[in-house]
Image 1 (cartoon, rainbow, N blue to C red):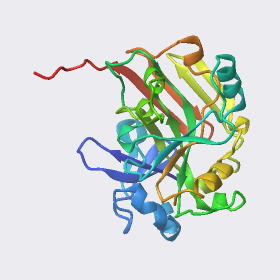
Image 2 (cartoon, helix red, strand yellow):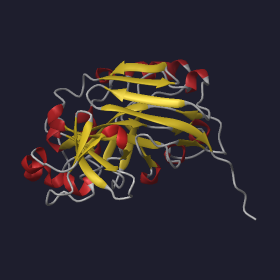
Image 3 (cartoon, rainbow, N blue to C red):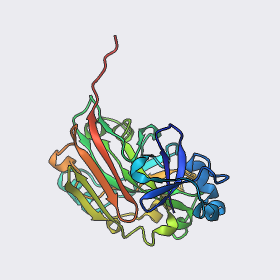
Image 4 (cartoon, rainbow, N blue to C red):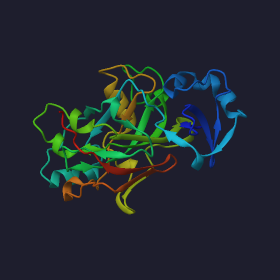
Amino acid sequence: MKLARFHTGDGLIRIGLVDGAEVVDLSGVEGVGTSLKALIPELDALRDSILVASGPRHPLRGVTLLAPIDDPQKFLGIGMNYAAHAEEARAAGIPIPTSQMWFNKQVSCINDPFGDIVRPAVSEQLDYEIELGVVIGKAARNVTAEDAREYIAGYLVANDVSVRDWLAKLSPTFTLGKSFDTHGPIGPWLTTVDEIVDPLKLQMTLSVNGEVRQNADTSDMIYDIYMQIAYLSQVMTLMPGDILATGTPSGIGAPTQNWLVPGDVVRAEIQGLGMIENTVVANELVEDD
């Protein structure tokens, strides 16, 4: 299933089942509600009702798609997790971690799949990072890599937008440089785990103004998504709706200083999951009186 959050212009948020070029309004299905995070634990029980739903149909191009999950408890990202990306970093003199390196993206950075990305007035080093987003389906604590797939609800496309000069500041974590408002576009919908045969063999492409910048396969991960869940769940309980951004391939802007600027259109697409597209806009710094 492909499950989206959307509105039709009337301000009412709905959950819908994506069916080709249309989305079926699931408002009439008892138990669906308006929160995908709340729906995830009930997906197995409601699956049959969702699949036969006969609610109003809307053309996808006629609705506004929203972030599939706008209120996760956690939004976590892993750094340097693609072999080719690690090599480009090494060539640029950046130390390569010897274990999984995780950071926190504040959930307030979450953005809609076609929402604008704001370039902060306090930075000129705005970068892009296409990533496979993994959404947790049930509480996971001390999970083995062999069992990790059972704890995944589904997948989505993520862009781990990064403010490089803030990442370079003397700070013990990446949190600030990874958490500016609008810097976590995700979507376009949640694709449930049963639709993706092998998430470790998905083609992923990111372009800026039509120019391909990142083009890779999820098989290039150093730590695959199951290893990531096993590692994290030793430390914390992963909860339904939590989002893991599982690493970006080579081709980011940092090595060439090819930063995003206002007017740029960033398109990120992953095989079987769809695409998100975001326009970069300027943010003028407003000084206090």
